[in-house]
Length: 211
Image (cartoon, rainbow, N blue to C red; front, top):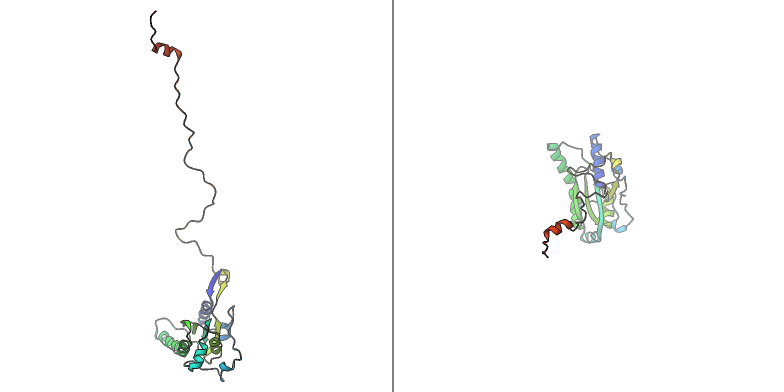
């Protein structure tokens, strides 16, 4: 069972779709176990027509949105840019365009004291841990396509077309744990040496006195 961050699945889908000539639509990015963050009818966070703009916030609103920063999310931007060969002028232009589209979001994330902010460019998106109120606001923002809960999902290796990982080099498969015979031969207990003499030899060895 392989575990991957949901953004990795998004990147894989984006790469596959880019080869076919485009990037996934925002609705397709919401598929999977990670649920999209829905906006509730909170009057304080009510969005104007087209959604709120990102960037600098009034101090009171920024203070409110900074409370209880405990929700990891992925903010997927509406602006998605075509792929370009690495190291080319087109790639540099694309990188600048992605950074420009994320700049207002990054500024706002700084004002609401978001943590773990990470930028991604294959899919134009930003991951961060924010408050529930900020996640709700971002979900209705005009430049944002989707706000997705950043979670780790379990994907069977078979679903990814992956074979089981081979054993590492230099390792041997485990051997059966059967009892082994000792290679040291066993010896019988040593016996005390015995001395046997015949009667005839004893009589020769002992001189007799003449009578």
